[in-house]
Image 1 (cartoon, one colour):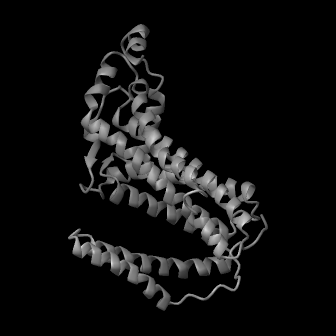
Image 2 (cartoon, rainbow, N blue to C red):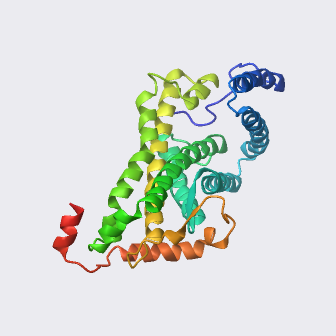
Image 3 (cartoon, rainbow, N blue to C red):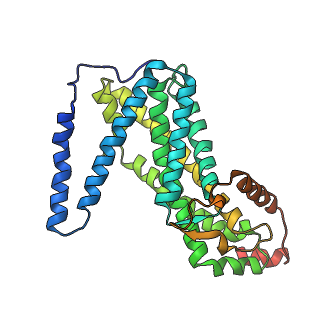
Length: 315
């Protein structure tokens, strides 16, 4: 892949706010349908559309300055902000339930997946030099954040739902001598399967049923179709890897917090969304790291019960 800007001007028509206004008519059509069928989502559609216009307008203004200055610290700051906002959206708006110290857990999961994958992918898979070139690196991080948020929400929502509604099953495993990792393994496996289903399905239909947005943007920006296709392949593989890493981390983080190092299920560490999201226990990074360390050390703890009892139970 050639270095430099892959979205160079190729004589495409310049879009104005009038063009955006014309496209907004499609949203008004949706609002009309909502009104006719009394769906009750007309106002939500308008608010979402206005948010889309405002947010993208602000982002475009900021990114234009970052792209022109080519400052690596500005790129790092934008990358952190994208992950922070993704974490906020996950914890506050997307998840129906939360566990204690969920905010730092999700933030670590996001940063620990999107940043390494974006650096490795940009430098080696996309051959970008330097890897932090703003016009390429920032969109990559943005796409990884968006996809990773979805996987994290699916995984953590399933884990918390099972702990809240079916904790008796896990407590039976623990009572018969299983460690918390053994007791929660079926839960973790199912959560990760659900989290990875969307990227698997996306890769399965790309190029046959759907032409993805990144490929479309590259083509409209002047890249050859072959280059755009290769770019989309790389992005999809990076998205899948990032989603996997973040989902694995948040799944085990939730398990280690909710099932303490003495192998007790702690439903008091789960709460419904909307209740005291600003409380310090949701944000305390130091406390979360302490809980997670105890969780990792707790994996080697052996509760009461013979090996044969645990083997029969887990089988």
